Amino acid sequence: MSSDLRIKKLRGSGGYIMASVNDDQQRKGNLGGPDLFLAPIGRLDSDTISKYFCNTCEKDYEGSPRIEYENPNEEVAENLILLEKGQYICATCGSTLAEYREFRKPDEMTDVGNARPMEQSNPFESPEQTFTPPQTTTEPPSFTEPEPEPQSIPEPPMSPPTPSFSTQQSSPPAAESQPVGSVSSIVGMAVYNEEAKRIGTAKQIGIDSSQSLVLVISNNNGSDQTIPWSNIKKVGEIVLVGTSSAASQAPPTVAPPVQTPTDSGKCPSCNFVNKAGSKFCEECGTKI
Image 1: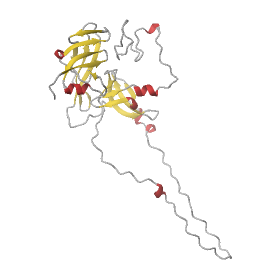
Image 2: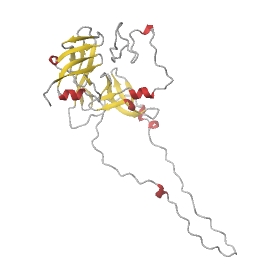
Image 3: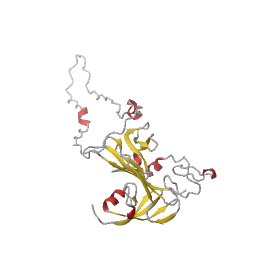
Image 4: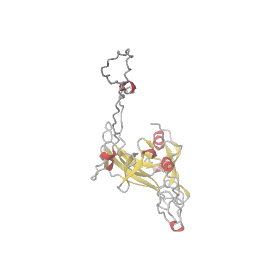
């Protein structure tokens, strides 16, 4: 790990902070784009934070925001322990700037197992949802000529033999099996959106009623939620969910929701009802 510290801007769902980070922390905060996110890095020493910006206050503050955290030490999946979860909170208005989770694998040599089993049966495991294509058998055309009945006329000269068309000649060669490398399970990984907001924990991968691949997560309310696999932007130490693919698949005839005067404070993106007078959504950080 490099000991060189550099001041970087670390984004959160409700603002950002300016802090001195090393190379390893910068690598964790890089989720594939030009911005660095605070949630994957976790808890920083308040002495390393020089200032922060609150979206609700729309103002810069010198020093560190308030950091609140707890250590549940809870097993969220097989071989995956939730060590710590916390929040960066604006010291002036109390709005949440960012949330983070820190996990640990008791056995580093073993992959993360399945999440806690559900009591109800899963529709993605039903026989109707299997991907087995119907097998059709095609009979090859028969080129055998019927035997002529005995005639008193002279036999005609023998014709050249009819070529035999074997179905094995038209079949493509079987693909050679390739050795399977190391495969890691994403079950139990934390799932974040593009605003570095944790939206749940990965449970399993399945097929929905439209025969599309989806990721089933357990959201923060404890209920199940499905995410189209085309929305998955990156899988690493966490699962990052994008929004560009989902937006491109939306029917062109559906109009976006129109904000009325009675919806004051309601986020047009996630429909979260914010405090009156809020400029940014406290849930996803979108400008109202």
